[in-house]
Length: 152
Image (cartoon, rainbow, N blue to C red; front, side, top):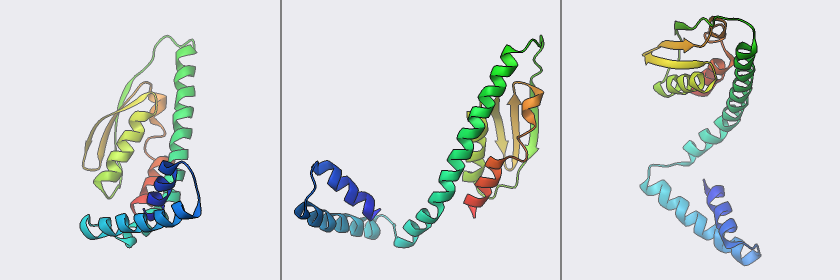
């Protein structure tokens, strides 16, 4: 957070010299100390964030890949000569440990085209799929594995 404050200070000043850098170091330290003291923030929380940042970045890349693949599947389904699309409601369970992990997984399912999370109750998900073929990757996906790693 300290580095973010310093970077914001430098960006808002529009120019960079030693005086601005030194003054920014002092101002950023003061704001960071204020946040640590009065807003329940600590260096341990910041270090945990930096440790998880790589995992979050991997999760975002996997999510974007899944969204692109689902887009292609929906386009293939629309442009195919099949006359009947067979929607399905799929129920499955996951072993996500936290409510935030469950919410992230439900949102990831909804973000991918062709699937919508209808309900989440504890560890039980109900998902509407545009076609039965889209229900295959829900239960054991790379997104779920990445979220498990981030929960720990």
